[in-house]
Length: 88
Image 1: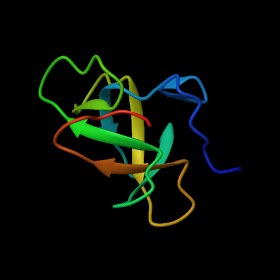
Image 2: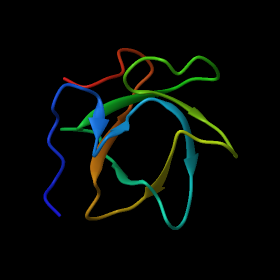
Image 3: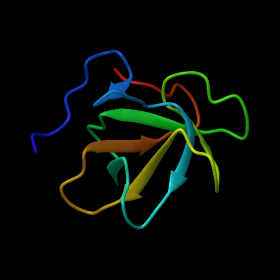
Image 4: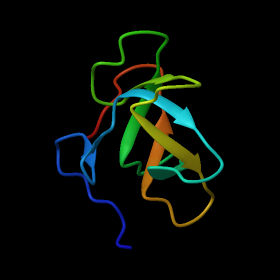
């Protein structure tokens, strides 16, 4: 699979990259790798209203999408931020 390229629409393969997210160990919608530099998206974890690009609210059930953390061959590279989430 080719590495993810940002399109500016805050989506990956039709999955919006904001909203309620569940972390799983298998069968993810998206595989992510945490990085400090050159991320595809900057993510801010929020406790409510994950309505803007890069805002993720962690839930245990009824997620908008599921992610699995990997150390190689991610679908997208993620940097965790406290402010200014989103895609460049």
